[in-house]
Length: 507
Ligand code: GLU
Image (cartoon, rainbow, N blue to C red; front, side, top):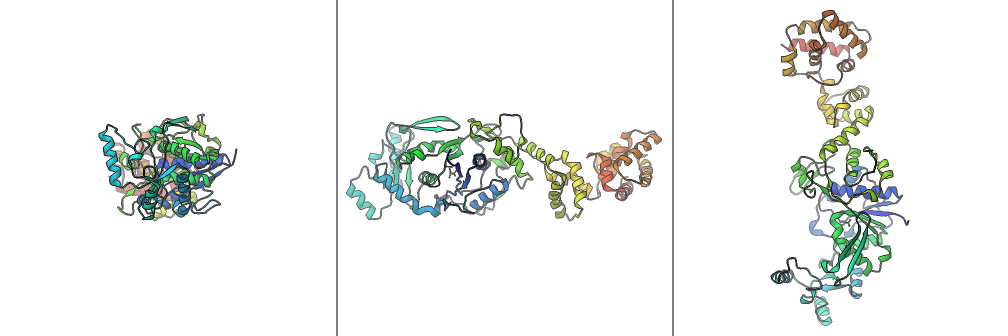
């Protein structure tokens, strides 16, 4: 196989939605699996849809996800520039070539003339009128006007577009890697604009020319581009590039959790979960859309979840590192059917990653939260806290929220536990227990537990009589990891101080 070269080709019209990230991911996995190249090309020929900050957002998102680029607007490459607005001069000659060869034509129609045509056709009973072989002869273009007239109009500076001339009643066949043969009759296609009056190519023309010039071997993109593929296939043929036409793979849609329709950019915050990898701030409206990163997701967990939205390895393994995804990935295992987004599963992935992350690594991250709250603790202490809490947490922030008492003595004590477990004789027992703990020489969880049990036996009381109150006095809450481990970590001095504090505060 010739060298695999794939491209992710977003338009900077806003933040990258998770569907876009998945497209980038599948391109990346496919490239790396086949020892090929991953290219980022910015498709910004539609100046009217340009959004400030979107390009940077795309680049930052890919970086956070760990999707590495071999050639891009940042680092360049042998096939640059990688931004279509910087390639503007490249496209026009190809559009002219298509006109010369009879595959495209100039069209001078004004907006009003186009609207009038559509109204005329609708009135004649055609519900979705198109500029095509049926209507083009009634319009102002180089096929309906004389050559003289056309030249005159162009020379006088009249604005025009270049349209592809779609033939009547031919079949265009595309062998899609995911969908198999896709066959479209040209009677269902329209004469799309290839080159606009503002001097810019449209998506269709620029996309095909760039894929050709950049030696792209596979076009892997969302299903929403499938309807454009026949136009692209014809362009390859008309430009004489049929033999090097890339292979196509159109990825399935990502659906809303209930399966009803495509998951859109607007769904996220409305349905209660982010649809963007990282937070997006709209510089015009000031609106903020939440991101997975800011919501405490580990990027590897986010990627693992995305990889499964449309692909599966064919085994029961669910947790994959990026390298494992690369090894296991194939387009043949990408399904045709839309993939339902499952937010609970996304959380589950994060939980799994949290559990499998070393306590030292987690400690590094938790230290960031601690610093924000003005708490300075040694790394090995924080690592032990992480070790005790990680089974119970879904997010790193849970560790901070559920485990504040490791770092700060409680100021309040859970009311319900006081009512149920803090009885008249509790202070007496706690006070005695405190004195016993004071005596322990080697203050570790094993010795603490042993001493606690001896104390219960001696006093002929059950564990339920004292343990909840003991926990409450140290943590302020009723649940948490093994109490004796917590006590060991707090250390003797702090344990004693907290018990005294609780005894003086809980009435
Ligand atoms: N610029 C298109 C987009 O925004 C690219 C589609 C393609 O990959 O051909 O998604």
